[in-house]
Structure formats: structure tokens, C-alpha cells
Amino acid sequence: MSDEIGHERGFSGREITAAVVFVVLAGVIAFTSFNTGMGMSGGAGAGEMTAAVASAPVNGQSLYASNCVGCHGANAVGGIGPALGVTAAWTPAEFAAAVLQGQAPGGRALAPVMPRFAESGFGGETATDEQVEAIHSYVKSLQ
Image 1 (cartoon, rainbow, N blue to C red):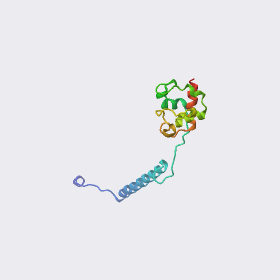
Image 2: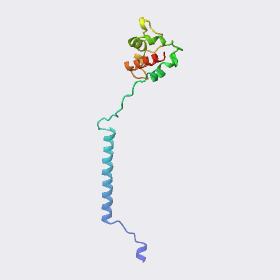
Image 3: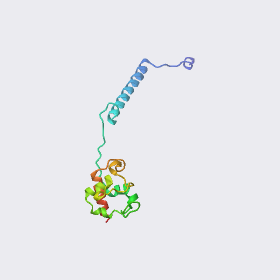
Image 4: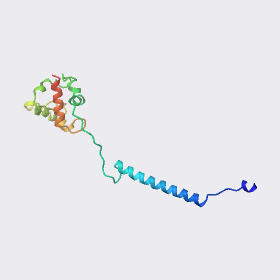
């Protein structure tokens, strides 16, 4: 009994080998998982991945609300800027010239406070013909 009290048992060679094999396998699995994850996420050295996003239809009411309503009013009846009822009779090209370059039909320059959306764009993005047409359609629907 006295031998058992002060005697500590060490690890056997087999237990040490098993622990080393476990640590090496865990490292290999971790390294492989990391590299696989980097490839899937588009990380370093992987091919570029982009999400497939369907382009949303252009909403004239939304564009009007975020770019025009502050000056022309909620129903295009005017405010800081004039009422837009007259624009319903404008051609798409005339409306686009007014919105994009600040040119009314007949060559009259619109007030300097009117943004030139060809320069500023809508929401920081370059203005498109489709957006201008959508706003024109929305304004015409208010008449």
C-alpha cells in the first residue's frame, strides 16, 4: 500500500502516440476546412463569386418620392418648384431634357435650384432612361 500512495503513473508510449495523431489530424482538418471556406466565400485566391440578383422593376412613384417630392409636392401640385401638370403633355424626350439637363421645351433653362440629374443621378447612381420614363409616367398618372 505504501507503494501506491506516492507513486504517479505516466503516459504510455501508445497514449502519447494517440495524442500526437489526434492533434495532427485536427490540424489537417482545420486547415482543409479553412481553405475550403475561403474558396466558397470568394476569399484570397478564389474565383470571384457574385450573388444572383434579379433587377427590381423601376418604380416611378418611389423615384419621385425620393427625388422630386421635396420641391414639387406629394401630388406634383408645386411647392418650392412649380406644379408638374404641364409636363404630362411633354414628349418623353422633352421630359428627359428637363430632368436630366434642366432644359424645358423651347430651350428655356429651368431654375438653378432644379437638379441636373444627368450630373447627380438618382440616389447617387447614374440616371437611366428607364428611370426618367418611370417618373414621367408617374407624374402623368397624377393628372
